[in-house]
Amino acid sequence: MKWIGRRIGLALVVGLVACGGEPGELPPSSEPVNVSASRSVASYGLVTAPGTVVAEEEAELATRMSGRIRRVHVEIGSTVSAGDALVSLESDEIDARISSAEASAELARQWHERISALAADGAATAQELDDAKARLDMAEAGLRDARAQREYVILRAPFFGVITARRAGPGDLAVPGAPILEMIGSGGLKIEADLPAELAGQLAVGDRVDVYWPQTSGRHAAQVTRAVPAVERASRRFRIEAHFVVDSAGPPAIPPGTFVRLELGERATTTRWIPADAVVTRGQLTGVFVVDGDELRLRWIRVGQRLGGSVEMLAGPDADAFLVRDPAPTFVDGQPVRDVQSVRWTPPFAELQTASTEGAR
Image 1: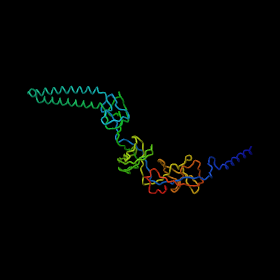
Image 2: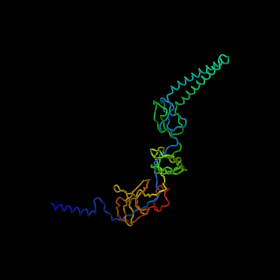
Image 3: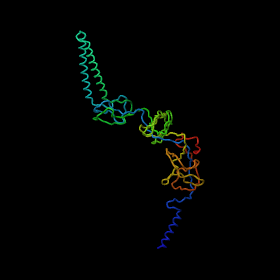
């Protein structure tokens, strides 16, 4: 039995040697391949921050008095003009108050006329005439106030725009300060973003930023129009607002409420960017194939942020290394190379590049 065990162990060793080494290791290929390759590109470090596109005009609409909602005249998505009726409240109570005020004003008016006539005949004193005049003034003021309350029964649109939300319906109790509708204006757009405290003082009104819209991978120029000079204690952030730079094509068609990303060039440092299609993964490791003489070499890298088709390379091969584009899954370290085609590559944020772009040539 011991002799049989030795023969099995020897066979396993011979099998491993024949297969080329450790279990799971890909055997090197001796077939030369043709590849396309590009160099990394030096660029300013890029700081990004989340932002939201909002309408220039937006409002939460609430009534100025309490009352039951009788009718909501609009739905979500309705386009309204300034002054249009949006919500009507039950008006029975207001109507009764107006009727009472009208009656009080009429009695005060008749009393004032009577006292005025008596005073003209010398049958009423000046004090009685003054009291009648004050009574009439108070009654007329009460009537004006009651009629003014009648205007609060109808909630009207403050500007031209679109209804975006509805929070109550007929029969609900309207309370002052509790929004019933939300609407946005159909005018311009702006971007709001809360930036980390580290950037405080580095952005000023008039500075240009780039707005990246992930949905379309489009970039739009914007200009800072407001920068809050104070950092919020809890979040350690400060707010900026920016407006799109409008050209002949008009403003971008980005719906309000859309998430965007602000891209800020940090010109104190530089970094390197590589094509996203050059990056390969092996388990938990990330690497690239580089052309080393007439062979491919797998080099591990450390990556940062990813923007579109570009990846920030924080650590990896030298700047003059040729990185293989779209490497085949069968490529292995040490693969022979027959021919290398140099491909010019420029990151999509080329406006942030330094003058040192020889790596893309």
